[in-house]
Amino acid sequence: MRAVVQRVSRAKVTVDDEIVGEIARGVLILLGVTHTDGLDDVDHLVEKIAGLRIFEDENGKMNLSLREIGGSMLVVSQFTLYADTRRGRRPSFMDAAGAELASRLYDYFIERSRLEIASVAEGRFGAMMDVELVNDGPVTIILDTKG
Image (cartoon, rainbow, N blue to C red):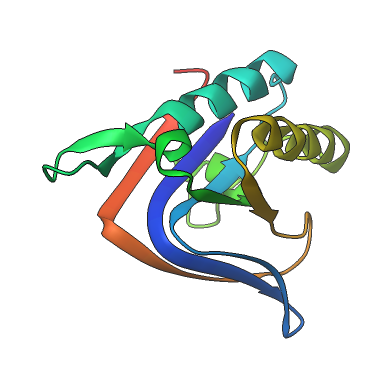
């Protein structure tokens, strides 16, 4: 499972001109699922993200977690995180999980995140989405449960 974690001052997801998810201060998570991912990967990733010390304390040091600041999370499914571009010019997405597994683990990720973070918003799985964000810092971290 892969996640691109972006610290944001605000972010939103729009589908067909309708805002389906929106947050203020917190993190935007772009989430990709591969064939070998399971519930343990989700549990590990949610715990890691909720506890990442990427927010500044009173001394300006990145020393506080999303939990500690009471921040929000916006989760967007992103199968393209598993693009393989080693050959040719057209990416292959063979490493991305199929829709059934990816949807199930995405839903579980949302459910599990809501146990850790008070405010969790989401995109719409499988939809064409417009994602807007203001990256705060910028701070962007890539996490992978397999590496």
